[in-house]
Every structure is written in C-alpha cells, then in structure tokens.
Length: 415
View 1 (tube, one colour):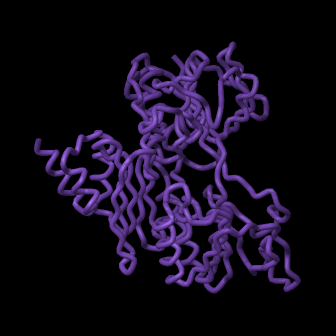
View 2: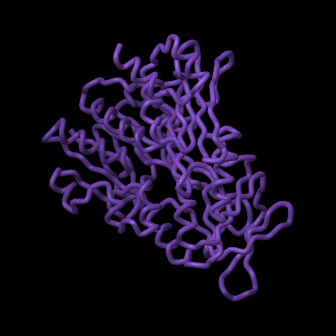
View 3: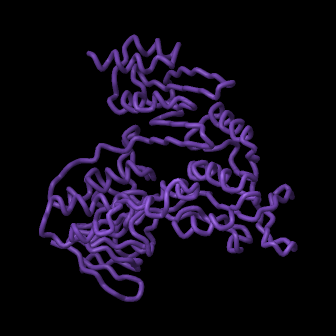
C-alpha cells in the first residue's frame, strides 16, 4: 500500500506518523511545497522576536525523524491529479502513483488588488522565507506598516512592534479581528495597542503602495482618503485562500475548501483532505466550514490517516476557536460567540484593566464565549461548550455574573 501526502504542515506530518504507526510496511511519501523541513507557521512570531532559531520552528526537532520512520519526504509542487489513474503530476513532469492520497496543502496569503504589491520591501508574513526578509528590514527605528488587523495580523503585530518600534496598522473593517470579536472587545484591543504606541487605523482602505524619492528604499502606503504613511517595510496580512487549484479536472468537489465528509474523505475514491484546505464538519452548526487553526489541522490529519488505513473513525466537527496574544493582551473566542436568535447572554466588562467576558447561551447550554485578558477561563469555556453541558440554575447565575464560569464548571464536573 502506498500513501502519498501532499503538504508538510501539521496535518501532513501527523497523518504520516499515524500511517506509519498503523502500518509498519506501507510506503509513505510526503511532498512539501517549500524547500524547508516541515515547520509550524505559528512559530514564526517567536522566530522574528529571536526567542527561537529556525530549528525551533520545525515540527520535529530530530533531523533524521522522517528517515527513521521510513517516511520519504521530498519537495515539489503538484500540477494536477489524475484520479482515475491514482496518480499525480508534479511541476516539471514527474509522476507519482498512490493507493491513498491525502491533500493537506494548507492555504496561501492573499494580496491586495492595488498597485505596488510587488515592490521591494512589501512582504507577507507566512513562510520562513518571508520571515527572513522581514527580519532584515524591520530594524530598530524603521517605519513599518501592517496592512490587516485580522487574526494573522494581530499575531505578528507584537513581533513587528518589538523589532522596529514604529508601527502603523491599517484595517479596512470597522474593528480589529472582526471575525472573533464584538465591538466591545475590539475597542478594548485597539486602545491597548495604542497604549503601546501602535497607530491603529480602522475603516481605512489602501489604494496603492508607491516608491518615494528618498533613495532609502522607503515607500508610501496611500490610503483612499489621500493620506500617505511612510514605510521602510510593508507587511500584508489580508487573509488566506486554500491551495487547491491543482485539483481542477480531478473531479474532487470544492467550495470554500475541499469538501470532505465526517471521515475526511472527498467525493473521489481514495482521496482525502485535511487541515486549512479542507471544508469539514463544524461542531456548533452542523454545517461544513474551513477552520484554519492548527488544532483542527492536527486532528484532521490523525482522523484522515486512520480512515486511509481502513479504519472508520468519525470526525465530530471543529469548534470555532481562536486564542490570540496581541502585544501582551490575551483574547479568545469559542463557538457561537456572536450568539443566536432567541438566545441569552451575559457580560462583565472592566475597561480600566482590559478585561471582558461575554457568554452566549441557547436554552440552558453555553454555546459561545468571548474573553479579553482572562486566560484562566479558556479551557473551562471550551469544555462547557464542547460537552454541551446543561447548566440548569447556573445559567441565570452566569448571566448575572459571567466570572463564575469556573464555579459552574466545577459544580457540573462533580455531578
């Protein structure tokens, strides 16, 4: 049996290791799209801050890890898949046959459709190659403009702030991290960043990036209202898109990502998908969504591999889950944090100390939560949501005082 995995991120690596554990004799080939050992993108901020070296980003620290497991790891990009022949073609023409195929190709960063995106000094912060370029330009005293204050942007914000010191953030939405925060939480986060001397411009669109005449390689980030922000480095964090173009003509069904069922199987026999490229079951809604977070990728990889081995574990669905550290302020959101029609909610706000907790209920169950500056409740909130715990009289107690969520959890754990 030959298993081929396209992609060498967390989903691909976990899948390869799970396959080997389940079948000592199978042939396993993992194809990565970058000329690097398999690594975690989530470690890049730590690399920029020099808390780790490049080796610290690697998913497995032992240089011979994949060889020791007889996992063939190679670099290449897939051009097409011929599902009827159980084969794929790499750029350059090489063909690779498979018995089972896992697509774990992740996502790629998007660029703004405005002039100047290809100028020197304009970079995404997505790959190790990007990190190397950013580290050279984000020197002390340099002007840096970060375009995008979503989840990815707010992860790297602190690194850019520490490296350069002069940071402006431009976000086209009305609030920062709009997909995981309400107005109160986002406003708190913005004020927090401003206390760290970070300029945050929301409801602003970039119309162009242009060179300056100073000879220093600086640029101007031009806003739609005519304002210009000087920058030695421009970092883009405006969203990602799944890597699945090579599936054209393969018969594999796609939507926002590759459509998979509860076994992480696609509609085409012997082809599975996992990680940021897979549109799989959502725990909260029962629908199918792309959840581009590492815990989901890891669990996808494990479940997909077990199904490739002929077992049939079912993936119960991803919980929308975001935990974010921005300039030292921790925020988190889980499940249906925006609430549902007819549901109830309770919140506690401490603006002075940058603390906020909002809980959302449906019937007597916690279905969503959003917190700022309250790390001690993260695991508890996730547990209550995932376990669909009937809260009974504790629901009204939590609406009146959300900070009792730990007490509610303990009370129900003892039942």
